Length: 227
Image 1 (cartoon, rainbow, N blue to C red):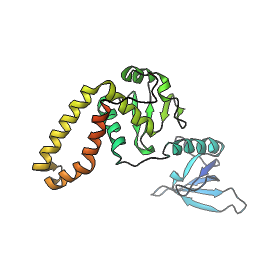
Image 2 (tube, one colour; image 1 turned 60 degrees about the horizontal axis):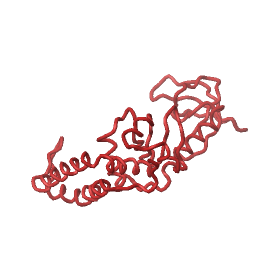
Image 3 (cartoon, rainbow, N blue to C red; image 1 turned 45 degrees about the vertical axis):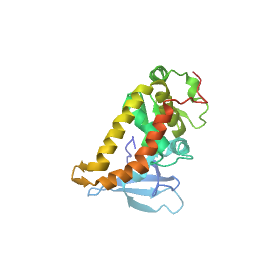
Image 4 (cartoon, rainbow, N blue to C red; image 1 turned 90 degrees about the vertical axis):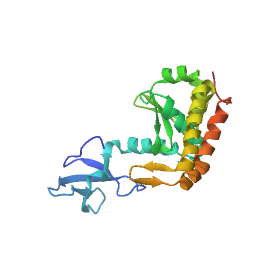
């Protein structure tokens, strides 16, 4: 909520995450904690209720645009495989390790979509043209950035490995050495210790599948890229 509601204004209200927006009038703010605001529903009953201010999402005259933006972001998650998908994890690791977050950033809360802040940076790094992204139907522009869905995140990670295989192979070697050491000696964490058996199982379930994608991408030839 970028704007603050004021008494007398009409706002879009939502009680729960999937509920539709409804129009309410802001009556007054409470003086005690936790913060509450008295609203009046705009239907014929004119019911009044004290609610958390966070339920007021946007001025009512902006409700349609607010809903459209939510729908755009929701579409990015279509077909999303979840946070433990090894192919997506491989791409995320490459982007986090080798790319400038001021230029490109993963939107983890939106199905690992990719926010491209500087196309020139990405085009130079990956040796691609803008055509690399044209076939992603749910891509959109927002605030000067371009947002593309998670399949593009995978394509970007794979393309980096193809263009810069030495960097990725060094990372794979380091990860394999770390995993081998932890599978024998375990791993110390902030408030405890993870046994060698657990470390080995985690690597077999998640680490190795991810590294297989990383290694394969070092010889990856994307079918959809316009270079």
